[in-house]
Amino acid sequence: MQRALVCADRTLDLSVPRIMGILNVTPDSFFDGGLFIAKEKAVVQARKMANEGADIVDVGGESTRPGAQPVSVQEEMDRVLPVIEAIHRELPVIISVDTSKPEVMREAVKAGAGMINDVYALRLPGAVSTVADLNVPVCLMHMQGEPRTMQQNPQYSDVIQAVRKFLQERIVECVNGGIDRTQIIVDPGFGFGKSVQHNLALVKNLAAFCALELPVLVGFSRKSSIGAILERPPDDRVFGSVSLAVIACWLGANIFRVHDVAATVDALKLCDAVKNSE
Ligand code: 8Y7
Image (cartoon, rainbow, N blue to C red; front, side, top):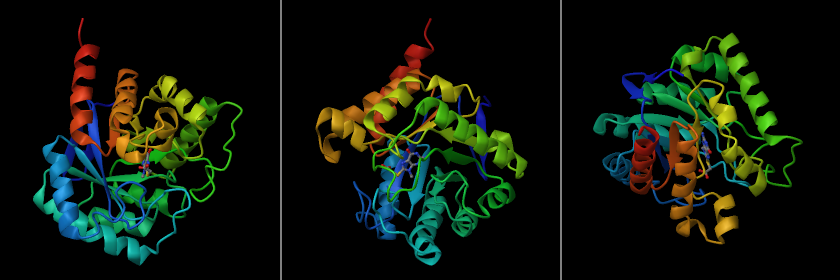
């Protein structure tokens, strides 16, 4: 796997675990929705995450929560572009834009984003050619079905095989469409059309995704599978989230999409130190 990603005007060295802090500028996200609608509040939260050690801030303007309402291109741009511009101006972090819409990707990169995070893995029309053109790293995430219905009894005959095959096919499609292979990040997509047992199997078998020899991103921060096992609401899932991050780090994940930056940074520093010991 290559050791660095070139994110427009900033570079992400992958020789150590990297933290992507979550910044939702949506009124309906399950945990922090509505809190950071105002640009100023968003920048304050981004600065807090950067100070705590976030390397990337993932700015999203459309909730992918099961049952969430879709938003128009214009509405999504109105939400994310001012925030991206302000963070790019004020902070040294890499900005990732969490979107599936090619128009939003293009404008976000103009505004200062250096990475695309697409839960549809560039399956919307025009998305592959747009990213090929923009030449920034892109995270391809696996999702079974679509957000509205994906958690209604998800089924696989072999979840590891299915996710791996999907990611391999998306990599081929992206490379054939002109995206440099060294710009691709893969993500098994915890919670996106998966039961608790599917999610656990995906963590345990993370090596299957590392074997693709591309950077691996994981996101389980405060997700419902943690709640199901711990019987805790989203507010009380920090320890659970950090525990899974440590396991994934141990198994080779490179980038961690989290709400709780400070806690995850410390845990992963220790995990990495043990990994690199004799
Ligand atoms: C993920 C994600 C979400 C994830 C990547 C949530 C946008 C749901 N989850 N992107 N986005 N991976 N790459 O609970 O797991 O944060 S939204």
